Amino acid sequence: MEIILIGFLTGLAGSLHCVGMCGPLAIAVPAVKNNLFLSKFFYNSGRVFTYTLMGLCAGLIGEWIYLDKFQSYFSIISGIILLVGLVLYLNQTRLLQIKFFKKFLGFLKNEITRFFKIKTYKSVFITGILNGLLPCGMIYIALSGAVITGNSISGMFYMMFFGLGTLPLMMGISVYGVKIKNFMGKKINYISPALITIVAILLLLRGLNLGIPVISPEVKKNINTEILICE
Image 1 (cartoon, rainbow, N blue to C red):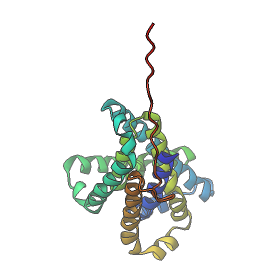
Image 2: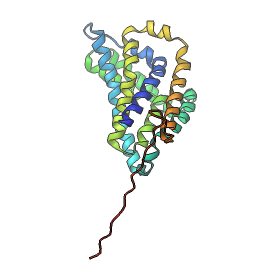
Image 3: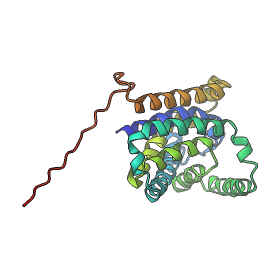
Image 4: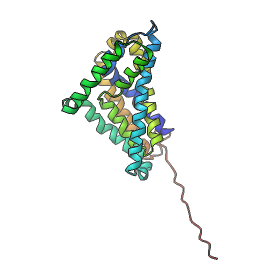
C-alpha cells in the first residue's frame, strides 16, 4: 500500500511537469472517428503501459543488486532520491545535449509523427507508448523509487500508479488543451518542484518513525526469539 501511495503521489506532483514538457504533444493527438476523449484515453493508456513495463524492469534490477535489506529504510531512501532527482530534473536540458539522447529523441519524434498520420486507436496507443520513452527527469526520479522496492512486482505497481497519478492532469490537458496550459502558465515551473520537495520531506519523516500520527508513525519491531529444543 505504501508503494502504491508513494508512486501515485510522485506521479500527481510530476504531472505538472508533464504538462509543460509533453502538453503540446498531448494536445496534438488526433481525434479518431471524432471521439476526442477516447483517443486521448488510448494515448495516455499507452504512456501508463510503458511506465508499468519500466517499473517491472527497474524492480528486477533492484532484486539483482539485493536491495531487500534496505526495505526498512524505503521511505528515507526514496525521499533522498527524490531530492537528488529534483536537482537532475532542474538541469535536465543538459542531459538532452548528450549525443545518445539527441539521436534517441530524434528517432522517437520521427516515429511519433509517423503514427500521428495513421489516426487509429492502435496508432494513438502506440504514440502513447513512444511518449513514455521520451527522456524525462521525472521518469528517472520515479524509476529510482521503483529500483528501491527491490522487487519486480512492487516496481511494476509503483510505476503503474506513478502513471495513474499523471493521468488526471494529462487527460485534462489532452481534452481541454490550451485553456489549462494558459491557466497554469509559468506556475508549472514552480509548483511541480515544490510538490516534489514536499513529497520527499514527507517520505523522510515517515521513515524516521518520530511517533507523529499519519505523518511519521512509530513502527514497532517484533523481536523473534528462537527456542532450541535438545533431544
